[in-house]
Amino acid sequence: MSSKNDQVFQLSLTEIWIILCFILLLLMGYKVWQLTHKNTEMANKIAAYLRIPRPSGHLFHKHPATDSTMIRPPIPRSSGHP
Image (cartoon, rainbow, N blue to C red; front, side, top):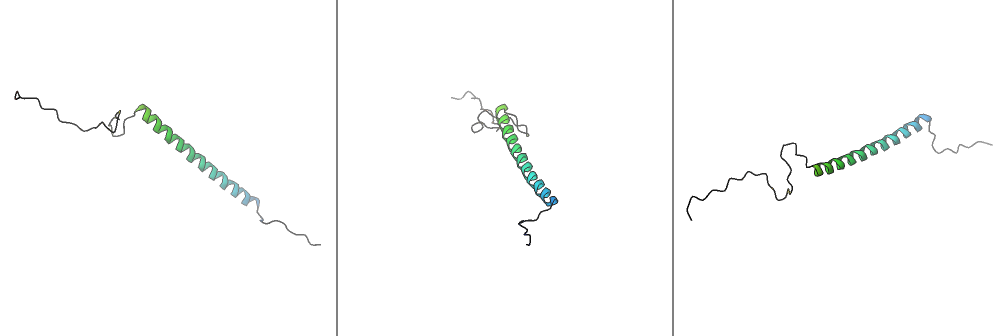
């Protein structure tokens, strides 16, 4: 009788290790992305809570939609005319 080779793929140990390393590399990249995303969210929450000034030096306002950083001219005083 002849012996049959039932293997579908004939992989060497080197090829198996390369595949395992590739899978581990993908998993590690995903974890780095996940942690970076978490750190960015946490930094945004902390910045919103602490009201850290922008790098340009302008301070945050309590109500950014209503407050303005424009310099307004002073209101003229009345000169005695009614």
